[in-house]
Length: 358
Image 1 (cartoon, rainbow, N blue to C red):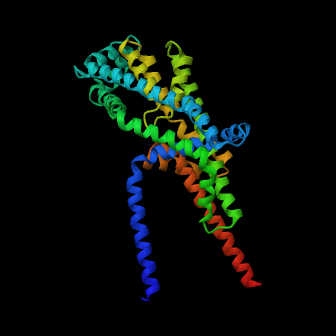
Image 2 (image 1 turned 135 degrees about the vertical axis):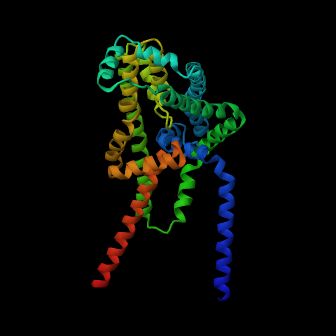
Image 3 (image 1 turned 30 degrees about the vertical axis):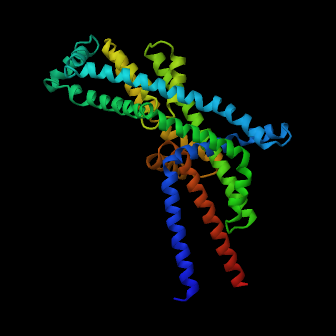
């Protein structure tokens, strides 16, 4: 190995180690930085118009845009988080109370309900005694879901200091994205060994897919909220419009989502003897409200992102499983960038083959 290769290997190794150390330092705050980037990219056209109205004064425009964005987007989300903590605590306590006797009181109320009891008698006439396992299966599952939500929310409240630091970091990052984002983008693109046309394709891809993902998420949340409100209306519960709106917001929360609202409502109906309505709301919640997002969201996103539905579905679900809610946004973008780079490479290969044949 000559001296030049040795120095290049040492430099590469040093950069790799330094890169790992930088990742280790930044990784606890990747969510904050990522959400700041998402919000900044989506709202940057508004900032650009504000900056133009202020005579191209970057710092002043960023100083006005950042608190406006925080008050519009971040503060309501934080308030919702603390509201869900309280609701999850109430739901968990209710489930604990039901399960204190093994769930027997709830099972007996279902068995003795005037609508359910005749059906049990008919089934028993053919199949013999019917054994219910709600106390050993259904209730523990509901308790586990409520416990997970409560523990997740408790962690946010318990670590108020860390949560506040991350929120503050996101706000500060958002300010610098507004003020210096275009300059940082130019510097980052300058080191990418691609033509200017291909660089423009990459930036357009990120913007297009990000807007499509947020558009799809917004529409999906509206659909889930509407379906949840219909379920509340059909079950005779009060304020279906209000709870539908709350479910539309809760649909953003991974895993549990709208179940934070309709599941306690269904349990309330069951505990008050409204067995048919309660079971119907549970079925509607699982089948229609909570599951439909995995079906309709890729279709909403695919058309605007100009990507196959399968790519959107894999990117969204894979990103959600790997990195949480931010991954559901970043997953389709990463796959879109990969496909764009693959197209560029294919074009280069085909061009090179054309030159060789000529």
